[in-house]
Length: 313
Image (cartoon, rainbow, N blue to C red; front, side, top):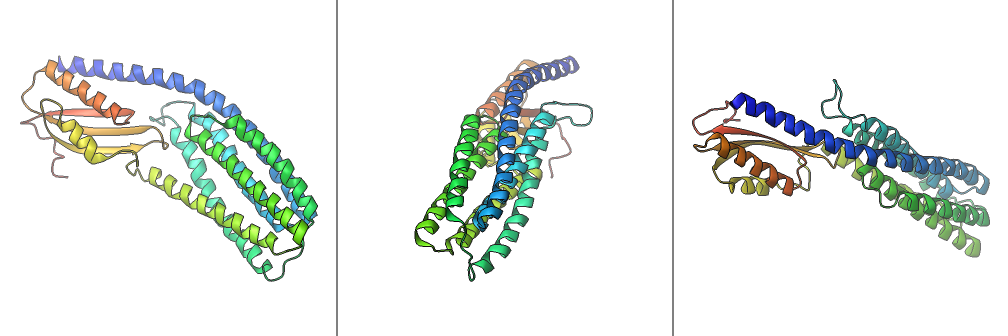
């Protein structure tokens, strides 16, 4: 009887999960399209900026080109990995490919950290010997950039996945970068203060560095299976102990697959219960965990006189 119940539980869990996976697929297909569009817009920009930076002689425009190239990497990997992530589970990856999409962002953050430090090495010495850039050219490039980036950000606005939110925020950052270049160009045009250009470059580099370090830390936390910040383990524990028949809890583990999908395993000790009560306890625990923001829970029940051999860990 117990064995039969176990199979039933497995089958049921599998079924609901597949269904959720199916809904997920539609979301992903649409977001892959949006990410692809954003990727090509950004790629076009990074190229326009490299040429523009060289033509106007502005290091701020070149730094912004690097910023856009970095975003291109983020969007490109996100777009590619979003497609991989939709493959779902297979023989090698029992959790599907969700974590790959997060890996792209993590690797890109490493590239951006190195790159922004490189940019500072180039732009800081220029503070002492600035060359005046072609200001009206800077203004022109910045206006064009604002228009295009604004369009891309508008296209991605309202995306639900972590990838899309990330891409949207990157595009918004680009808009900020362009606005900075525009203001810098206007100041140089009217005052002839050439130092504004390397100052802007340093500011944009610092901004990239700050964001990249944030992404790097978040990604490292996910890879090292850190408890997701949105989950309070003490609260989870207290909540599970309020369920009737539950006398103790141990071996609680929580981690996140990709920054949004949260997985939890727990052993519940139950007092003298029959099968029907055991099933009710399990269902109550599953619902409690769902309410606390956990998407996928594995719950093991142990009877009071049973030792799982893990108690002392």
